[in-house]
Image (tube, rainbow, N blue to C red; front, side):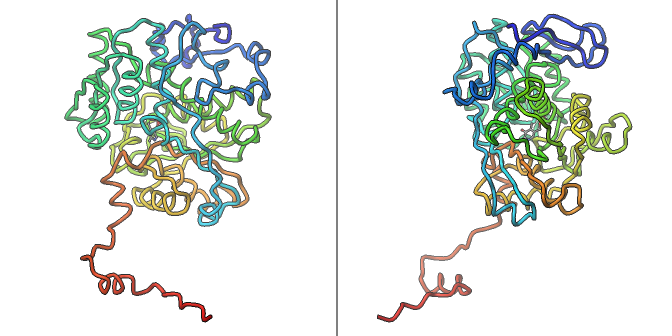
Length: 417
Ligand SMILES: *Cc1c(COP(=O)(O)O)cnc(C)c1O
């Protein structure tokens, strides 16, 4: 793996070998970061080489990824999700140019597949037998699916409040599921203790530094899909903080490898009822835990485990923090659906809700080019989709009643011959 140099602690700077089972810093317990030799990467690829590749998945960018050539890539097709130019929605929101990156189209329907595919590749390299994690839902179902395709057993800890469709999804992928009657924080702690006790491969994003390396592939795709022209802003929803940190890592990787010549600002979008990272960004104070009071289960993380990388990403990009209410997210779900044909779960729509709010408050200028990442598909949370969408017209099979129900629709008159 000539592209990788080492794993380096973001707190104390200690360096270790980038072995497949790197966890927290052995010296200070800080979060590790995988480091690359950008001079080597620069020599290995350019835009042309990438554009000519026939691999249409996250593994298209293998020079930037910490996987040795001897490890075969996991089977499910993760990544290379579409980037839609959304002119109708842009007009509704009042922004000149808007793109929607629909990561809900990944195999298990969320951006988490990028991290789980990487976890499976690293577990393969580590010759692990069992992979485990705790999750608010999507990391769990993505691990279960990607592990199932690669023949691993999984043990997965979810908080009792995880939406039923997500739990059904992971049971369907054959995972051993432990539903913990407690908060996400308590769920995480139990999984951590169990992983230590049983020696499972750890897919917890706040501990395993490789997961961000999977998530960063979303940035490579956005850049290539935009012809290497960076947008002014990228909006993304934030829970634990690994996704936005991964997005930023990918963007800076591209910059360091000379593939793009400027960087966008990041909009960190959190639920107003659970926004500890945004609060810390705004106040400059150390992060304080918050309650998990939002319908957006995927970003309801009261004690983020990775705030430092996330905070650094927002600051270094000269970005902004935007908090959105549950009502804002339900509205963004309707707007995405009705004006761009993209179906998002509440956390998936949070980025778009954040764009709307940032335009209204003047944080983002109307002349900007904005990418909003939809991080999870609406079918994952049918209850909230029903809440956002309302009820259909319900009538007995009768034409008169239909005409009455559709009363406001004008009937076209036949053109006279
Ligand atoms: C996990 C997740 C996020 C946030 O990612 P973090 O790494 O926890 O910040 C956003 N949206 C969806 C749909 C997710 O599943």
